[in-house]
Every structure is written in structure tokens, then in C-alpha cells.
Image (tube, rainbow over all chains, first blue to last red; front, top):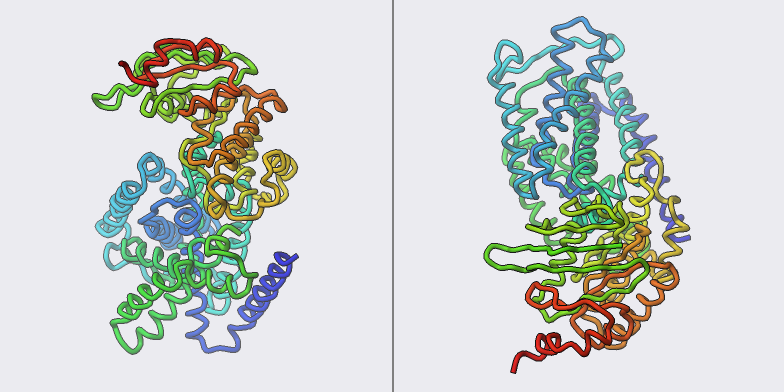
Length: 320
Length: 244
């Protein structure tokens, strides 16, 4: 009973946010429309990482590599070929997922930290290719002014397109989070050895999760190009991977929507604090320290605690 | 049903299991006993695939399962619990067992259907028979030690095993909890027609319920037979009381 009431409260809050976001663009200045859209894209990226890190317990240290690869694939197809938009839009995530599969194939054979180290090196390899292959990728300059079809020509229409795609993606992610696949993934995070002993092919399951997550990272990459009309090597750089990781931590990686919130916080910080000082990361650092001490479950963990029924012990919330 | 022949496993220089033999017949309740460090846990890990043997052969239902990965051995019908508590601490008690049932029914890969309503009946039946139903929504990590041990067995039952391997199911339990757990194991064997292989270092606990006892000492099998026979064996006395 209590659970159901909490769910209802949840849906009301989500519904209200949805409607506000829907009527936002005509009301607010262009700049804010752009920032909100950027939050969606970054939010989707953080959520896709969290599928592997928070729900899967794997050290996916170079998630940006997949995001950037997809963005480049999408941009290159649009800039250099006459193929229709939808083919380019699908090609990006498919490439990301294929790379996720290839890199994941080696990574899931390693444990924890080694998994992360290998991923950083293989991901950096992708970055190096993009950075060095000047003739094809534009090297350090990237590619600017990527042509978009008419229905994506204005910022408002891009905003709505991004909004719809992200909403659909989040719904699909939620389904898979609540599915037997997602539940099994949580169990693997908690105790891989026990999972093997109940007949679960742990590595294959982890690999499947990586492929799905990198596919969604790829969609985020597409959306970034739609918003920015440009790509540059920083999209694949490890610093961005670190930032996404922090978003998950900030928002709460044992929750579902937490990383999205974390991404929104990061984008706001960079935008609004970044106006006053280039040392905005200093503020981020202080925030992170406070977070680790006072909110180990992340900001979303706090929200859930305030919205939901009281449970005994902090472990109660995470298990749902 | 299960046949272990002359199995060996060493860790570096140390021979943890050195020529162990074990036979488990269908429907039997078999105990492996031995002093601490006799190699009981290593033997169990070899049987269920957590470790790979250096030498020897393991057969289950007339099929060789030596050195298969654990998840495949599980699919053949061997479920197990661990000596140290080995559960999913952040998941609810219900989900701990549900994950095993989902895996048993080959539903782990379903991606777009909610797990919430799945295999509820089977899961609840297991929880009920082990007396955990009223704690189903609690977080597994917050249970008492005794309950976590019972949950271990519940997870193993989620796979609907033919053979249940329990590695010191009563480790860390009080005497009352121990006898309750032993009764539970006995009841499970009768109710479900399960074959159970378990190990224990307390001899008194074992002789009450086991139909066959295997004694391990320094990685070797000393003897396997009826409890009465084992109790009177001189070598066993020596292993337990030391040579004088």
C-alpha cells in the first residue's frame, strides 16, 4: 500500500516535469533552451553509463569513447555522403555497440580495476585515431557546420526531437532495468560468484549489458551532433569519461534516474558557475567531497528518501 | 549419482586435496567430515566448478563434469551454498531467490517484460518452506546471520537442483540454530526427495542425520561408509584425536 502511494507520488512529479519541459522552449530564452537540451543529451549519456557501472558493477572507465565514436560516425555520414538522416542516425549507435562488443569482449575477462585500465587504453586508442587522422576526421579541429534536414533546422525543433528521443530511451531503459535481465544484472553486481553458482553465464550477461549501454551512449552521441552541428576529439577524451562517472556518483548510481540529475547538476555548474570563474571544477571538487561524506547514495538517494516511506538502515532504499 | 575419483588440487606447494574419492547415491544424505584444513571446502569447490582439479574425474548422472564452469554445472542440476555467507546483500530477500528461479527457468535474458510478476509463486513457495516468507521484502544484507545462512539454502533451492551441496551450513550458528538447521536439511531431503551432500567439522551434528559419511584428512579420503562403521574406525579416531 505504502509502496503504491509512493509510486503514485513519483508519477505525479515525473508527469509535472514532463509537461514543464514540453512547454518550455517558447517561454524561456534561446540560451536556456539550448542548456536544457544539452542536459537531456548529457543525462542520457550518464544514464547509459550507469547501466554498466551502477547496475552492473563494472568499471567502465572510458564510456565517452563510444559516445564520441557514434557522434563522429553520424557527423561523417551526414557531411560526406548523401545518405538519409535516419541511416546516419542508426549507424552511430550501431558502431558504438559494435565497438562496445569488441572492447567488452576483452574487458569482461578481467576483474574490476584491470577491466577499467584496459578500457581506458583501448578507448584512448579510438581517441588517438580520431585525433590523428586529419584527412578523414578533421583531426584536432573536428568538423563544423554539419548539414541538418529542414525539420531539425531550428533550435526549438532540435529541442523537441532530442526531448522525444531521450524520453523514449529512458522508457526503454526503465523497462530493461525492471526486467529479469536487469534484475540479474543487479545480482551480478552484488555477487558474481553466487550468480555463477545459480547458473548464470556472468560474462555473457555483462557483455550484453555493455552492448546495450554503449548503444544508448551512441544515441546520445547522435543527439549531441543534432544540437551542436559539430564534433571534436574531446568527445572521445578520457576527461569526459571521468565527468560522466562523476555525474553517476553525484546523482546516485544505485538509483535509476540519479545519473540524469547528476548530469543536470554538472551542466548547470559548468554553465552558470563557469561564467564567473574558470575554476568551476574547484566547486565541483568541494561538492564531491561533501557528497561522499553526507550523501553516499547520491542526490537522488536523498530525494527518494524524502519522497518514500522511512526504511530502517540505509541499505533498505537501494534494494527497492 | 555423483562420483568423485582420485581428485587432486594443489595451491602452489600445498596439496589441498590429494586423492579424494566420494560416492553419492540418489536420494542419500551424505556428509563429509574432517578436521579444519582437511580440504572439505576445496573438494566442494572442485565438484561445483569454482576450482578446476589438477587430476581426477568427477561424474554426475553418468556424465563427466570435471572442470566445467560453475554455471554449466548448476544447469546440470547441482545447487550449492557456501561456507561464508554468499548472498546478494543489496537485493531484497525475495529477489535473492527470484534471481535463481529466473535463471533456472532460462528467463534471465528477457529484456522488455517486468520481472515483478515473474515466478512469484515458485519463489514464495521456497521462502515459505524455509520460513522466510515474512521477511521477503527485507534487504538481504540486514538479516541476522542465521537467517542469511538459511537464505543461502533458499537461493540454492531456487535452481530446483537434483543434488544440493551445502558447505558447512551451520558455520557460525548457535547450538540451537544448528540443530534447527539440521532438522531443516533433513526435512528438505524428505519433502523434495533431494540428494544432499554437506560438510561439517562437528562430528556429533553429522551422525544424527547422515546416511553415509566420508572422512577427509589432509586432503585424502580415509573412509566412506555408514555412520556406525565410520565411528568405530581406528584411523578416524587418530585423525580426530591425534596420534598418541
